[in-house]
Image 1 (cartoon, helix red, strand yellow):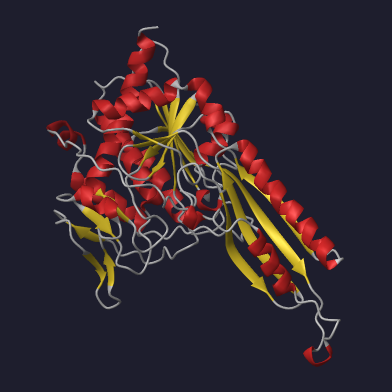
Image 2: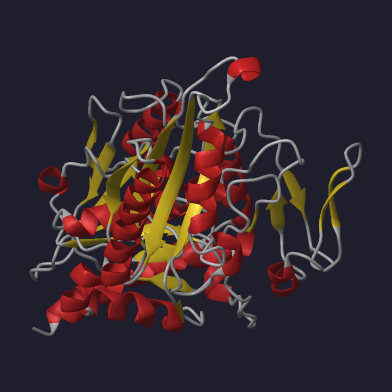
Length: 438
């Protein structure tokens, strides 16, 4: 999941884990599969131009290809860019739309994904979890309130030194376990199901070389959400902005009326943007400007921004504001001292999903039938599904169960992964039933 999801209020409810859940998903098998994935370092690199952006992503991609073949999936393939695809054939006679499930195997460049050493907390007691005693790193419900809803469950956490990788190896685990269950239980009727595991989602390029025509699904679901129950079909419109400020370096002893310090001009730009329209001051559908990197000296300063807004008009206005501000500062200094280069990254998938809202309705009904309360809300970030929706593959996002992505406080309840498996199976079943009636 690109960026973090901080800013939403915690939603608390009780999830009923019935006998069906226990029969469908073996907890230890889920844990073993998940651990085998997260221990493989798949960190992507935004400074690389290759696909995948890091060679080490091939290690998990090839493992997934082999596992799909071993479990009996058909049309298993891995292309030159490491996209892994496979097919579970239909087992019904009537015509059913081909649906898909998608997850990414890279982890964010924001935090180390090397030498992941997960901890398993059985029957979580609701209190503080010591992630790293030596460094005094604690996972506390006093700060991370979502923890409170998982009392009594099994949690998988980090050891405080790395991220966990539940984003999105939990999603991969859930898809693989659902496929395994459907293959072993042919009495569950479903249409043709396609799956794809992608590289480089965390750097915004997961869908760039996704072959939608080859995938061949009418619609799909990314298993890339956070807490149990999340169902999302709208996300930020997103752009990156590189602000380049040019100064003039002169010996400071002789700089009077000659030196132009690019760092001071950069500060003028930073301070002229709305201070409260930043990630730490916004939530829900509120957009923001986020300064996420800066480097400079007297001669030149580079500012790296991301621009986000759910509303397309507001999104365009934010980009225009940055360009206008650049012009005003150049006029103030009477020289071309500042440029802004803006690149669109992805757009709000709501535009493409709303015309086919039945695909959201099916997912919502699937959750209800497995005793999950759907939490429908906008994503304060992006997924492969946003870009895929604009490439002709409408693609809502479903929870994978993890929390606190992109850092050492990341954790995932195993019971949430079990429920995600059930949701995938139920969506497959409901789709076949829905189209049998037509």
